[in-house]
Image (tube, rainbow, N blue to C red):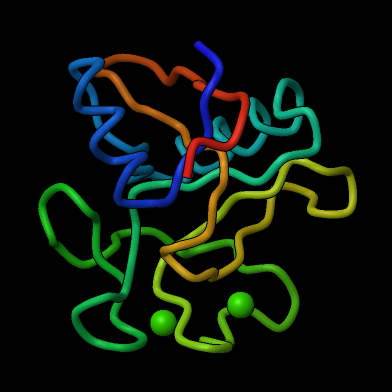
Amino acid sequence: MDISAACTNGWVLCQSFGSKLAEPKTQEEVTFLGRQTHQIGNGGNYFIGIHDIFLEGQWVYAGSREPVTITMPWARGAPDNFHEEDCVEMGSAPEWHELWGDVPCSSTLYYICEYEQNYEYQQGQVIG
Ligand SMILES: [Ca+2]
Ligand SMILES: [Ca+2]
């Protein structure tokens, strides 16, 4: 599979694989996702299934809309909601060190789909 997409499209694409955008709910999952992204992310940035679309600063899981249960590993200066940034990206470049940033949901990024027991990566070209 060779695709990247805007956040909502990433959500739809994950669903088409019978999964959803990754929703790390424990510190272990955050660390695991960060390490995986760092190892195989090719320097790209990846959407995960967390946003503050409904209420600024209130981060919820995209699937359940429940409040985020973990300490979010924000990069320095994030989240800054610069130009209305309500989606979360995870960087894979070395300087990111497994950190997160807030980005516009309309950004075109790679995305991480989550299955019941493990995480899978879909990555590739821009489609929109
Ligand atoms: Ca925001
Ligand atoms: Ca930001």
